Image: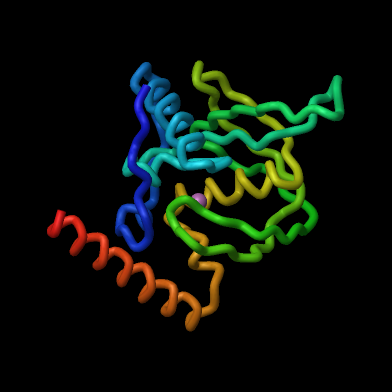
Length: 181
Ligand code: NI
């Protein structure tokens, strides 16, 4: 396993639409493992393949949940979704979202509170699950990535412009630093 580099806005790859995965091969499985490792290393709860430069419809996530046996305990809920498709959504929820590809940005986003999603698991089996609250928010956020939609798009035009300027400045400074070092 290895940790991968997460692309940052305004990297143009983050804007492309990702392609469905035709066959769940062993290279897809090992990519998912690397994505899990990357997500944990970066303290994220979800990661989409385009964020590490692979334009395919694969997302990994781990939204902690309460242990059904011991409600005092928080347990992992690791999930990899291939070709995810929301087949039902209901209710409204507003959540303050962050994104590993949009540093220093928190945006209050409107999402469906409950969803049903179809996908293939890492063995290529068709699955369908229900998700609500933060887990539903996370799935919707990651599917946005597969369609080239970013958290920054949820801002108004002026805020978007300011954020872009700020990121370009940071990217420029990092580049300068790289030449010096
Ligand atoms: Ni994100």
